[in-house]
Image 1 (cartoon, rainbow, N blue to C red):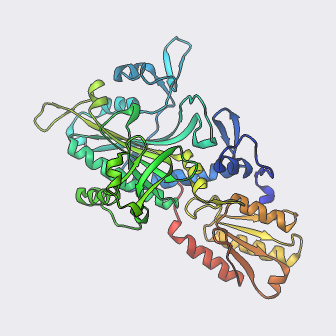
Image 2 (cartoon, rainbow, N blue to C red):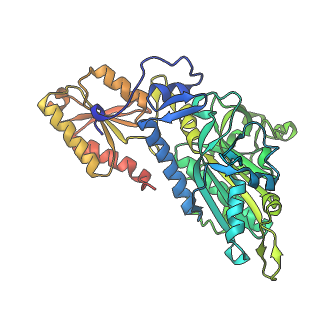
Image 3 (cartoon, one colour):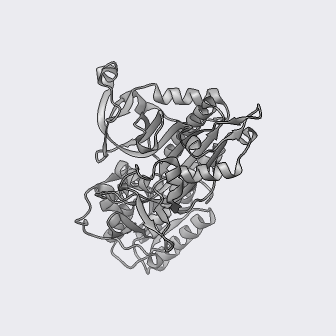
Length: 450
């Protein structure tokens, strides 16, 4: 994409309404625009990152054997009355009536909808286990929406639902999700720590939250420092293998890590003092096992191996897709702007022309642009007739991991300058070598668009 043809309404000044780094930088980088309290338009740059994150979630869900579908954003209140949650959910639920006077609601979550689909179409234990999921907009009418997309009223979320015949099978589904989430977050350049948490209005006895450490986190967290040394890496996991999934779960959950809601001071004090840490964390996902709470209330049963109706054990598993943008920025930025990890960057490399209009510089930039495009990468070419300082400031603000600077002086020596946004380190290379290095860097991150 040529920047002269792109819609990127960057701001030079910090917006007064932005209280945290991610909100400020998303507004300044032209990623979002607030339309009303807690509700945002996603502008092209923000939308590109949102789709990158969504694609990673889809790919890792598919790898774990989960099946995507799409539910409506508006739900009938009747389903929630069946489950017993309609009156108890609270004022966060946006309630309304259609023209026929039927009670409706804007989906804050979708346990009831998925259970209703299941009971209508699944009748036998032979159809289990089953995991269905969606990535869909949700709405919760927060009393004080703040911090941009971190705590908005409208948000984009992956919510998945598991259906199993036994508690043992359901707990394997729980472990499978925990493992797939670890891989998902690492691909985004994040270390999300699974922490024992409170189940809240969804219910259930088993639940873990995934939190990214950040000074602006809404939760206080207590953890063993050793957990931050753990990496999922490129492990070959068979998600149907109960023992493999259990082993990974135990590796990542055996060390102390809890939110303030479930913190146990006595257990925490058993951790060696030099390893105890207290910090702030941002929740980016949560998994639940809640047994037969919804299936029993809504009459969802299957015929068991003995021919009799059998109970269905359920779990739900969520990832805050839109919230992840804020979390990534909170975890990866400096005083000049965002620093995107390679896995989610909106463009793979920025090309800065120091002398727009110079025939040799223009030709070199065009050649770089074509080389990256031919390799399947997305460059952002700043071809504006603007001073070099302004171009560098824009590139730093929007946070592309790599920048190639092209100018007449370097070209006389047959080189361009390749700069790493994270470290600030630069090196001079012939254009062909710079292109090849970028291609090799992104090879592990190449993903298809879902």
